[in-house]
Length: 167
Image 1: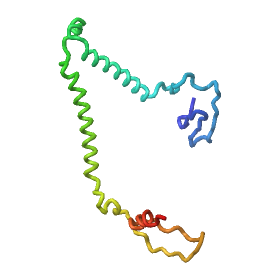
Image 2: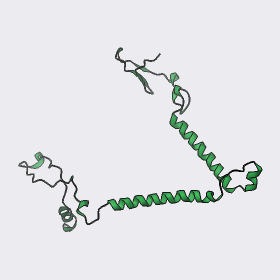
Image 3: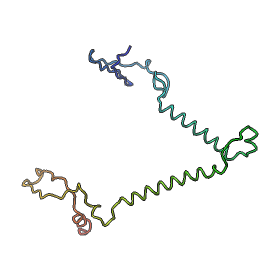
């Protein structure tokens, strides 16, 4: 029987028990769990089961929706289905959902525009974390000079570098 304080990995079993010394054992090729994609002796993972059930449910719901939307009422009455929503909702339901998504995206973009400062605002260049370059003068020359402290480069220096040094 395995130690309750052991960790299984695909290749080795490590014992983490304080009572015993650390033991490492290798699994042979014959001891591997048979099958592909099966999670060992505990069965499939819950995410695999939820994904399978979700996909089957989606297919069944789509088939039911399409049958309700396109099959004539006489056929539905013939097979014994008398209670179902109005066909009006076959068109308006998806339209309401699509319009809700479009309006939510528009609302999101509008909120982002409202929270962004104007392009002429100084808040686009400076905030509470901005650092002015310090007057760091090193007495060392060449490769022995230390790295300058981190700071922001001013917009005037950037403009000067980009536009005034054109050859």
